[in-house]
Image (cartoon, rainbow, N blue to C red; front, side, top):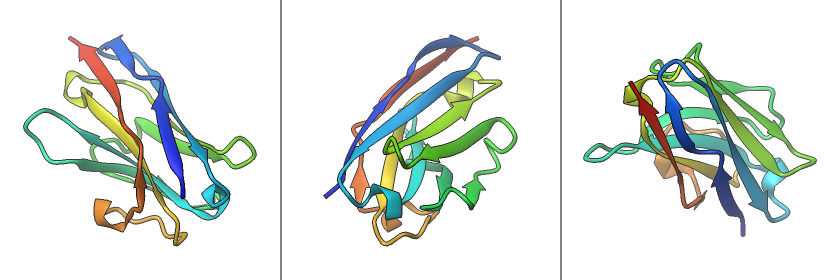
Length: 124
């Protein structure tokens, strides 16, 4: 099993930055693909980014490409999402997820485990 705990959310002004962290427990983290998603009120959960188990491959949604950066530190069992140039429309609950098969899918259906989410609020 993998347990995921997100942190780093909060209130930021438009144009500002936040770095989200997702701490994982369990021995399979280093072999798991990881993803970040978000869900705003009244909207479906949206894929943002994913990273391979080695960190050598990353994907980004068009909506965040060039502004967000995903990374991971397997020694610390942690995956990060650096978010720059934040916009009011980035406000949502942000979730990390793990795919223990080692893939890095862009669909939430591909992930086995999910964190509880962290709130990001962006003021205009």
